[in-house]
Image (cartoon, rainbow, N blue to C red; front, side, top):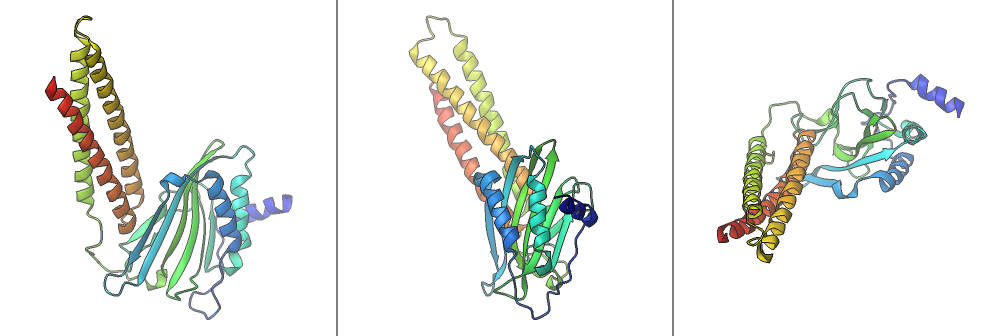
Length: 294
């Protein structure tokens, strides 16, 4: 155990390995990393927030990239969970194109390309307040692709939060550095418009609910009959639903920003946002019917 601890210290900020993506050696999967992360995901991953997206070429339908992200949260009481994961990455480093270990505060930000150009990527390490372990290997099916497995994490005492990434994408040496605009890229202005519209409608609805509840509460006890109490409770339920939707929209906005300009990830978020917006609109309509009757 002491020997392993000394190895981790000597490794310091980064591990770089010698594999060449252009040689003829066969692709080998980092089985120890995969096993360790699958076990970690089962125990601590937030399954409801898991996102998977596939980006195909618009002309021939070939795969450009696939991205799966799983947020997680764990309590590492014995300070052993993250070191065990680190050990798995180190154990598989010899089969990698690149294997790197960064603790919080070391190095800078990292991104993984998700398209044909440097304009399309996902941030696997938004800032160096996160630690990150990642390994990049050849892809078995396409020599032009590489597989990237990474986990970033932010410690707060014994609590760790972060994201697991499984990414298949074009090799970085083949990604073109040019000014590129694709019709598949999500329009950032559009998402902001949707967010603002949803917020305005939710705030207006909540204001109408509060006013109607005050009107009902202002009735004399004799007038506060059974129907009024039912209406009051129904409006309170609507307001709670709108609060939940508003919280979810804020969470999605944060995930959207963390996805950088990754078109596939953002497109999925936009679909979720539209669904929430429809739910909020339906609630507002039901609420308005009640208010109109009064």
